[in-house]
Image (cartoon, rainbow over all chains, first blue to last red; front, side, top):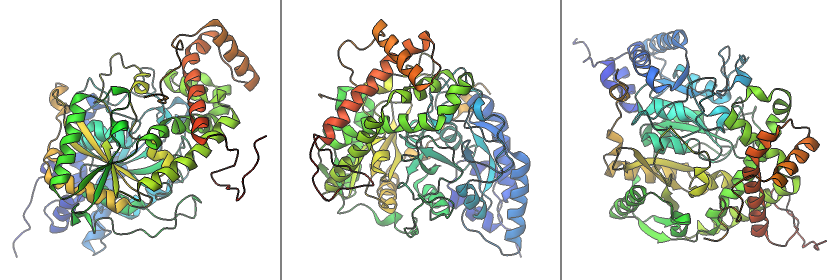
Amino acid sequence: MADPPTVSAESLRFAPIATAAAAIRSGAVSPTELTEAALARITAVDPVLHSFVLVTADLARAQAARAEEELAVGVDRGPLHGIPVGLKDLYATKGIRTTAHSRVLIDWIPGEDASAVVRLREAGAVLLGKHGMAEFAFGGPASDGVFPAPRNPWNLEHEPGGSSSGSGASVAAGLCFGALGSDTGGSIRKPASHCGIVGLKPTWGRVSRYGVVPLAWSLDHAGPLARTVDDAAILLGAIAGPDPRDPSASGEPVPNYRAGLEHGVRGLRLGVAWDWVHEMGTIDPDVLAAFEAALGVLEAEGAEVVPIPSAALIAGRSTNTLIITAEAYAYHEAGLREHPERYGRSVRGRFRGGAFIGAADYLAANRARTVLRAQVREILEGVDVIASPTCARPPEPLAGLDPDARFREPSFVNPYNVLGTPAISVPCGFTSTGLPIGLQIAAGPFEESLVLRVARAYERATPWHDRHPSPERDGGI
Amino acid sequence: MAGTPAQMPAGVGAADATGVADLLARAAAAGLPLSEDEARGLVTSVRRLDAMADEVRALIGPSVEPSGPVVAPWRTPRP
C-alpha cells in the first residue's frame, strides 16, 4: 500500500481549518508537525508582532501528541482535532497564568479552565498560548503596559485594533489557525477588520462566559477570530451552547453553523443605514469605496440592498459607552481604590470615568437599550441583515495614537453589543496604503447561521481572504 | 448630525478649574483616590459621559416606566 501524500506543515500556514483537518486525516501531516510549525513561526515572527504574552509550548506538544494517539485508535473529535489555536489572555486557563494583559492579575494562576476553553479542548484543539490584548479589554495600545502592545501584521507601525489585538494579529499572520476573543464594544470585529480576517460576535449568551475576565457583564460576548468564514463557523460550533456554570448562557439549540454556508444571498434583503455610515462625515474614502463595492458584489450575488433608518443604530453608541463604563467601574472599584498604580494609565483613566456615572444614568442607559432593541427589531422585520463597514477608518499609526479619535468617528460595532445580536466582520479590501478593511453583517438574535451565510457568499465572490501579511519581511527578520 | 454621541457641548475640550474641583469633590465622595492632575485628565471624558447620559434620556423620553428586565404593564405618572 502506498504511503499517504505528504505536505509540509509550513505550506499549511494559512490553510483553512478544514484543509488542515483533511491533511491530518489523510496522514499527509500530523498534529505534531502542525504544532511544531506554528511554534517555529511564533519564535520567528512574534518578536516583532507581540501577539502572544505566553506560549504554552510544552502543553501544545503534549496535546498534539495526544491528538495523534487518539486519531490512531479511531477517536476523532471533529475538525478542530489537532489544530493549533490561541486564546485572548482573559480566558481562564487551569494552571496557566492569565493576566488580562494587566499587572493587576500578573500572578493569577486560575484553578480551572473557562468553559469555552474546556470545549475547545474537548474538540481536540491544541493550545499554543495566550494572546496579548488591550488591558482588561478596555485600554488602548499602551506604552506602559505589562507586555508590549501587539502590532498590525500588515504594517508593524500600525495598531491591530482592539481589544482582541493579539488574537487578530496572530491569526492573520499565520501563527495559529484561529483564536477566541471577547467583544464588549467591537473587540472581536475591530481587530478582525484591521488585521484582514473574520471575527464573529455571536448573540449575547450564545457562548458561555464562565471563566472569561469581565469588562461589562451585560455587554460581554465570547467568540472566534479566524481566517475564513468556515473556520469561524467551526470554532463557534465548538464553543456555543448552554453551560450550567453560566446562568446567562442560552439553552437555544446549537445548529450546525457550517450547514447553510453555501446557500448564497439570492432573495435576501440587506439593510444599509446610510445616515449612520455618513455620521460625522469622517468615514475614510477608501473604506467607503470598499463598502460600496462590497454591496455591489452582494447585489450581483442576488441580494437586494434596502435603505433603513439610522437613529437607533447611532444612539447605540452612547448607550453602550455608559453601560460599559459603569459596569467596568463596578468590577474594578476596589482595585482602583486600593492599588490604582497597578493599572496602566489608559485603562485607569477610562475605568475611573465610571465613578462619575450616577445610578439613574446607568438605569436610563438600560432603559434606552430596551427602546433600541424594539426599534431595531422593527427594522429587521423589513430586512434580513444589516450591512455596514466594520470600522469607519483603517488602522491608525501606533505613534501618536489619539485615544479620543474614536469619538470623532461613528462606531458601527458597539450598537450590536447593546442589542445583543450577532455581527460578523469579513475582509472586504485594502486601503491605498495596503491596510485591511472589513465589512460587517448583522442580524437578529441567534441568526449566526444567517450572518455566516452572507459573509461566506461575499467571501466566495472575492479574493481578499487569500491575501496574507508578511510581518517577518516588514520586521526585517 | 445633531446629538451624535461623541460630539461635545461647545467649550468642552479643555479642563477648567470648576470642572476639576467638581470631579475632585465627587471622587472624594466616592472614596476614589484622584490627584488634581488625574482629575484634569478626566474632565473631558466625564463631560462626554454626561452628554451621553443626556442623549439616552432624550431617547427614552419623558416616560418613567421601567424597561429592561422589568416592564410595567401600566403607565405610571411622572412625579
